[in-house]
Image (cartoon, rainbow, N blue to C red):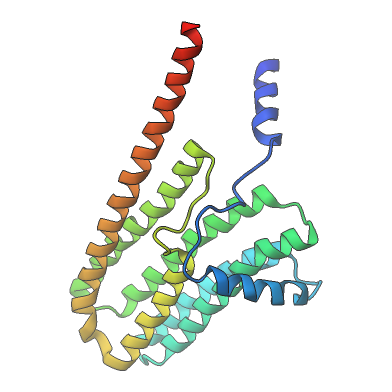
Length: 240
């Protein structure tokens, strides 16, 4: 096999340069509270628990959510356990990157890849779990909600590739706020049953769809401007 020296050099420049995926742009409403919690908790995580243990814990939380949602078909009180799993995943997801930086573990690219892949797995587990006990004529809506929510994820990764800025919070709303929303949804379901889903689920689908269109439109305009600004600089250099 013959190796292209230029390709190897390009690979080295791209993958050995400074990686920005662990540096998020934009702050959610809960950001100040999260920073206070991290400043208190990160040094208190037992040494036996590494950053990759915290990252992979999302698989455990996802599996437990599926179990508890299945049981919620027979006793809605199991949704309290599901909410506890959502809160647990929130904590481990907050801590994994902070612990890695605090201990200089070095798994920056691996953490970026696996953390966000498992965020998708976690989202799928929640929506699949809801479909277990949702009214039969509304189960199809969870497919559309998954598609729209995945659209936000795809947007963030493509925007990062185009701009080098990794942004997951929009208008103060990010994954943290969405987790809290799931807990609120569970509480409403426990208190009021399936009836409220018939009104809130379609409304939620409309809201997140409109939000995705706005976010993508703003990103499209910003990236277009970057290209045009770069072209103008190149044209000016060539003219001189």
